[in-house]
Image (tube, rainbow, N blue to C red; front, side, top):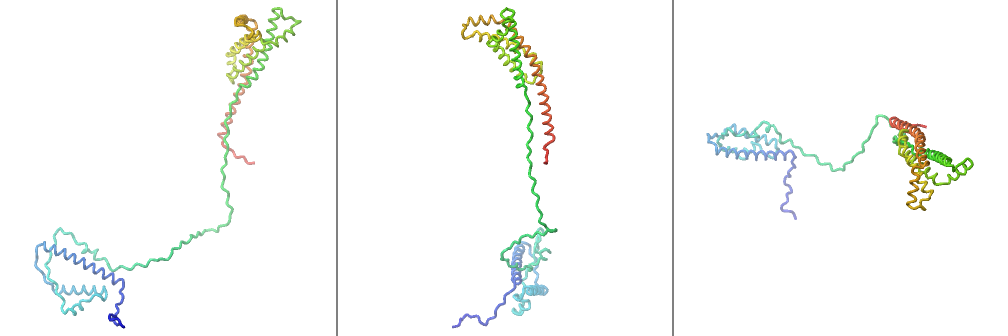
Length: 346
């Protein structure tokens, strides 16, 4: 069975180009805009005062026909020319008479009538090329050197060198020397104090040439000799620790306190010799009162005062040397800091 609606044998419409389609679309838009402007002009004409109507003449018909022919030539075979329209209709339809419209003075000019709009070409549209859907391949950049690159050993990066800053010199003291010199001074105090003891005994008649040795040995075994000696040493060392590297004048002035300490040591030695733990308070008070102005108490004060002055001069002289050494060490430290770190290669 055959299809009653089959179009076999009918003429096949050839496909049109993209330019023809775009041109026909542009012409349709232009005609629609012209119709819109005609409607606006008609409204303005109805509101404006009327003028004498003008009938179309032959020049108008010829110009319309030429415009139609030009559009037909540009648009293709789809639009009939002016001769074809005249042949089909017999007579070209006369344009309806239209009254001239007087535009108001303050009306703005139509932008479509400007020379710039007339110079635009609406048929210059071309079809966009189809998008390339192939995957994008990013090529690695190739670096071309101007000179041949040779395999050269790279020098190691310089490593930072850490240099320990020199420590500031610690100032030397003179207290240890004062203690050592105080031991010699205490030994001298014991010898002089024993000599004073024997001298006072000789004046009393208790010590003679025959028993001087026995009396000296007996004195060495008593508290009355060693307690003042120990108190003198402690007082001398404390004064040396306070004065430290001070001058000799400090020993001369403050040596009197060491003499008073030796004097007190003599009284304390008498209490230990008694002994004080076997005495009553009254007996201890009478003993201290009897020893306040004793010859050996005064001798202890004088010996302690003089030995402090002379042995203190020794301590002061050494303290002066220590001060000079400290100053020189500080200067050397400052010179080392100013010179900065030095790199010594073996």
